[in-house]
Image (cartoon, rainbow, N blue to C red):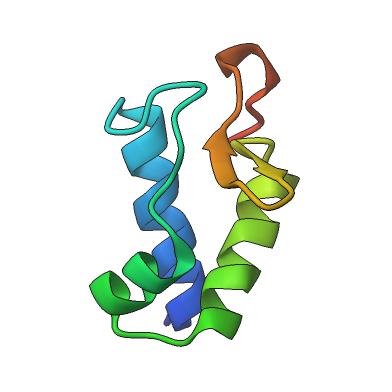
Length: 77
C-alpha cells in the first residue's frame, strides 16, 4: 500500500515527537518551515496538524502555533 504525502509527514513528525526530538510543551516548527522541509503546501501541513491533534500528540494554540502535548494525552498507534 502506498501512503500519500500527508500520511508520510504525519508518520515522520509523529515518530520525531515520540522519540523525543520535540519534547512535551515545545513548539513545532512554523507551517512555513515545515512546508519547506517537506517540500509541500500549507494545506498539507494543516492536514498533518489535524491528524496529529486527533492522535493527541499536539495542541494548537491560537496565534502561537502547534505545541507537543503532554505524554499522558498521547494516543499514537
